Amino acid sequence: MNLLADVVAPAPLVLNGLVVGAILFALGLVGILARRNLIVMFLCAELMLQGISVSLVSWSRHHGDWGGHVLVIFVLTVAACEAAVALVFVLQAFARTGRLDAAAWQSLRESNLSRTIDRELPAIDTVPPKFPKLTPAGIEPAADEDALLEREHV
Amino acid sequence: MIASILPSISPGTLLAGGITAAAASLWLLLPRGRSAAADRTARWLGWLLGVVALATFIATGHRLGSVGEEAVFLTVSLVAVISGAATVVSRSPVYAAIWFAMALAGVAGVLLVLGGQFLGVATIVVYAGAILVMFLFVLMLAQPAGLAPYDRVSNEPLLAAVAGAVLLGVLSLSIGRLTAEPPACCMMGGTKAALLAGSSSAAEPTTAAAAGIDMLADNHVARLGGELFGRHLLAVEVAGVLLLVALIGSIAIVSRGAADAEPTVARRVAP
Figure 1: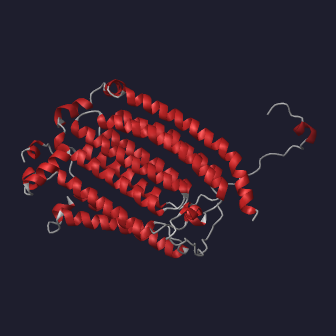
Figure 2: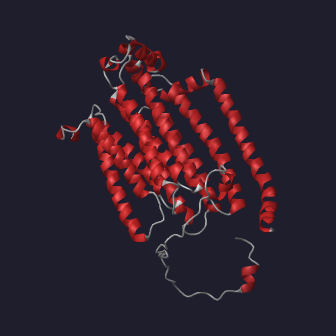
């Protein structure tokens, strides 16, 4: 019972850091559950890792040692490896299906789950982007077609 | 501050309301394939609810010592959280990646405030400089023109938002219990309290104050390097091997997959 009396309550900064880490982790969880684009799902996984990093550094601050910092460095390393391998898989998946859609692989689902069928989406008002137009200045010189083909330097 | 204006509402109720508002906000903001007008209304409502939720979180947060420190922490954490939410709900994956870069900037600021100077810089360099650029390269290779149908819908947005809210609620509960006074903890049965103490932070020695200040000393990076290459040298070597394996593995998958992918597509088209 007296064990708990020895525990120093975390400083306010540490508690706020833990809350920020928890919010980032929950946001990433929502994203990875809800979104269907494979790349956005990976971005959300990275967001969860960021939440973990903030929590680890908060605890490191609380305990006054380097464990959390060292662990975050390894999280960075593993995240780099994971991103490299995962993006290669995403590219392969795109090469096979032509879509970055997680539901394109729904033939891998459990046999008792029903099939995801996309309903018809309402049209979006696609306004073509307006790019700035350069006004031509001066007189356009007559192009010599041979000179264009035989150009030695780019 | 706001909590003192509204004395009738307990912080727990306020936090529960904030988490509910955050979940409702995410549910409204997630793409669900609505028509343009309905989408605009839902997004507007969603951001409004998100602001309410953030205000509740700020109101229930803990006050730091000085106003300057509080302002800096509030700014960087708001940047991180708002950009993170925008990453999750952006329709276009390119915008999601750019919002994620913004969230990384906020996280780096939070790490700096928390005393991780090297980690703040390393996050920017490794994530925003390398990993995010890799994501953008893949997007350029694979993203179709315009908004794909699968970017405009979500899998079970309601259940996902509820799951996030439940997770956040559980985490806030356990973070809130950290501040509870020891008598409040000891009201439960003795064996249970001892079990809890044995399994959680009481097992480790807490040297909070003195070493915490020491961590912010001038030779921060040198001491972190000493710790990393002294006590954790073997782990560093393993991490190096892991990087090499990931490099070789991704190259191998690309080169084998390129040979594999062609016949697969042909086979799928043929029957």
